[in-house]
Length: 493
Image (tube, rainbow, N blue to C red; front, side, top):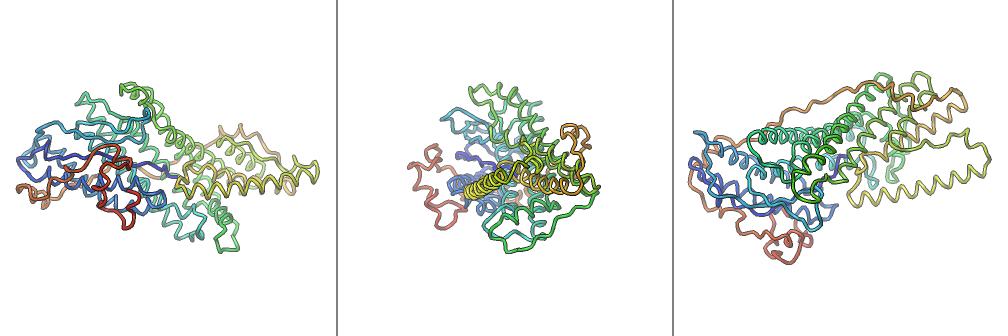
């Protein structure tokens, strides 16, 4: 968590060949000049090995934020006004590579001919980038190669990630509303599910759900305690037993249910999108949303509801109702699609069975740690939306409370299935506000009133073949110097 988006790539687009501005003659060339580093930086990012991509994200963000205000100004000028006027002189031809729409093997880029789609893919990329920056901020919480962060650092990292996720939600909602407006004025059909209104709203709901669950994670001591215990590099030798006040436990449960509701909304939007928008694309095999995204959204919904069950169980345990608390934990396991482990009362058949169970747990622990290291090395950590992490917390609490109930309380454990109907309603903590894009300032616009300078038109000389995109021999010499590239990384671009 959050979702590991793949950033798209794009072909060259020499804007002065297709646009002219009577009021700001330098605007098309200025915009084209800013687009060239973005294209090069996206290509470079794709060719970096996964462990190095996180350090490249801030540079890519700066490049993207420098380009999109000029692009929006160029697009706004197509609706003539006394202050800014842009004229379309010829139909532009360019392409973007969709990353959320499943397509037939061999299909690489979408050929596009409207500046509106350039706006959509550019801003969608900006939203993906904010989500990836949120992942980068959260990575120290999940790494096993360094000591666990202190509570203060942990809070700072989660707060930073939350801001990025809310920004991502705002941008996707902005694009969804823009797409709805476009549909009322244009018969154009979205060329890919990536930029169709339902997908954009689904991605906004997804980021909203992730931000909501992070608000709970910030004050949830159980995952941090387990991660610290499992981290071999952690120098802390004593861990205090985590405790949560009763009122906050119930509040956290309601926040988790709100996050699960947003994830459920995203899931239904994605499913409905495949049934409607996919048929309109007119391309066999193109009308499906990436399976990894669909699976992640469903896992996030499950995690939200399972975490809510855990906090409701904590609330019951604080009231001294251990039996109900255990039932809530098992209800959470059922939400994750897991069966609860056998209680100690079920293992009274002798020491040989207990010994076998201990060996099984040891093998499972070793296998789990190996898998964690493999996932962290590949950069795919969190792709299960925190499902494995929540399962470990539920199992640890269930083991602890069952032991206490068997030896001290001996309370009846109700049927977990009967408890799910008693879940409270969700409670919102964040509101996705309207996104306000950066606009070109008056001074910068005034400079663009002059004739085009010697900027060279930007990326008109670059190649556009897909073999170049995939790192083939074509165009490699021209790509030796890439804007924003790191020294010594030439072997990857």
